[in-house]
Every structure is written in C-alpha cells, then in structure tokens.
Length: 271
Image: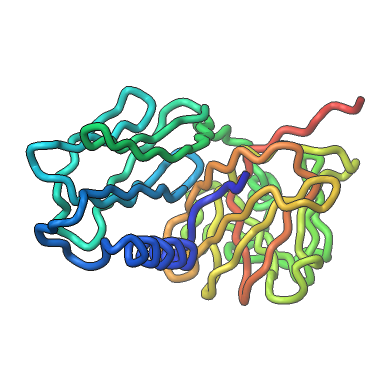
C-alpha cells in the first residue's frame, strides 16, 4: 500500500488519467444537457494516508439527485448534472480502516475503496537537541559521515548539526543530510539492525526539493514523502505523519539537503 503525501506530480498524473477516463466515456469538458442515457463517474486520489479526494461527474437530471458517501457516516449531496469539467470533493478520516466511497444517482452506483491510516499526534523525542545545546556557536556544525543518537545511525556524504538557524524552533537541534549523491549513500537505520516503525518525521529541505523513501528488510518500498518547504528560505518545518511499519532503512534523494528537526520512532524488540 502506498503511503505518504501525494506530490504535485502525482496529482497531475492522476488528474490527467481522470481526463482520459472522462473523454473515453464521452463526459469530457463542461457538460450541457444530453439526450444520451445519463452516466456517472467516480475516481479517488489518496492525498495522504488519512485524506481522500473524490473526482466525480454526473449527467443525471437534477430531479434524480446524487449523493457521495465516504463510508464513515459522512455524506454530501452532489450537484447534477455536472456544470464543471470535473467536480472535486475532499474528506479526511479520523479513524484507521478500509472504507468504501460510494456515488449514488438514483439506482446508478459507483464505488471506490480507500485505506485510511490515522496516526496520533507525534511524540516529541528531542532528536539532536542535546548535541545542539552543547554547540559553542549558533548555526551549523559538521560531524563525521556517521552520526548516532537514540539507537539510530544517520549516514550521508555530508552531515551537520544545526542550532538556532533556518526555522528551527527555539531550543531545538536539527540534522542536515546531503541527499544530492546516490540515494544509497544517505540514510538512517537502527544501530543494531532491528526493524523500526516511523510514525512521523518533522523536517524540511534546503533549496531544492528532496524525497525520503522507507524500505523493508527485503528492500521493498514501504512509502515515500517529498519535502519542498525550504527552511533556509524561512519555510516552517512540516510534520509528515507516515505510519510506516517494519522499516529497515530510510533513504533520501534530491538535489539538496534534508533538514530533520525530530522523529517519532519505535524500535522493535529482538525476537
């Protein structure tokens, strides 16, 4: 199951697919009254692990009425016939689970499924804060290619600890990891090789966007998350609630640095 937040490129690709679908159904563009049998269309984009966006369109007469049911007791009336190229409706789930999203127009029913993962507010674990507090000056300080803390190893071609710089909250330390070389060179994992769960990461980038990838012990991709909030330009850190389970390693790729403020992680106990 894909996790993380849909990037602008992901959304653009999805919406292009919606346009192709509608064109194939003869429902492209802004519709006017049609003599053909009425139709409906529904497709759902995973915006992030707990939020869905429904793309829909109908040609049913107003008297028929259409309803969108999100599967969690949330429902809403949908204008029909559609007067826009594509109607979009957004919904955020408050509990994890499998949901069936249903568009009903009279006896015509379209469905789509959504698996929601809702993670509680992240724990403040204070990664990098103690090291940063001992720095003799504010800004950033280089460390060797491997940095260890709280049972985790951070490795990159360049690593810096940051303090009182680039949107970091007062009293917080940060970690800069260079992501612009091979993805395999920039990563973090446990020092013992144990699997871990990554509930959330609070981070940003410097300049160009960077993306993190979570992998399981077999090298399979668990999920990814892109950061475009350039902290060195004043953008605030963003907390991405990921809910990644059984993670062996998290890597980074991009044309700049990943700037981590904190992680909410839990290490599995040995068998």
